[in-house]
Image (cartoon, rainbow, N blue to C red; front, side, top):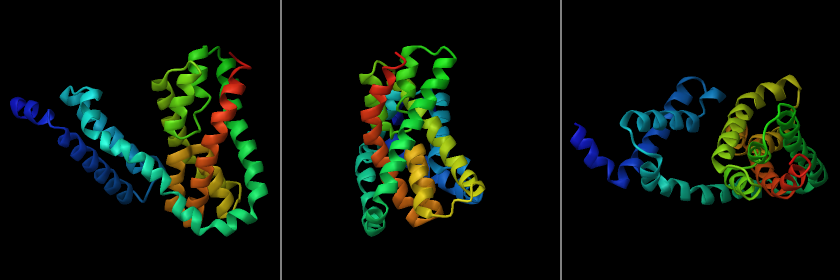
Length: 235
């Protein structure tokens, strides 16, 4: 079996197939548990793949060589969020001023709260640079962290944890605050929890999902502008 696995592991198609299978397994678990936010299909897939890589002693580089096609599709998938947004274009225009106000307030809050709390605990400059863009989508956050002197690996972890917590807490928190407007719920979730939050918003309501995609995209742009500036106050 060891010889067979060694032979198969050299084939990039194996890891592409494993990635798709892991996500399909995550989707089954997600639906079986009543769509619990903490058991998002992406989270289950990552946990499953991590266990496989650890068990088989496979390096991440070997895995990524086969699964990079899925990584490539992240860009087109993000662009596709424009489709439901286009369907809600009239609503976006009517709410342009509240959206821009919420964007500025949310982006500044997401960056400053992380930096203030981390700075109070004596966190060093490298980790501060990784924390600053935690609410932006991964591709943007990694670039910001690297250019600000932070570790892309640490930034990826912070983005993952932010998305996980945001997707799990958004619906109960917004319900407790009695916020009923799907536009506001979606925009806040996408802004604070990027891709994970947007995926969760689409599961709850199509309008919320469209505005979550808008919040995720605009916050990525705003974070790219504000994070380096605000980081200078602490580093």
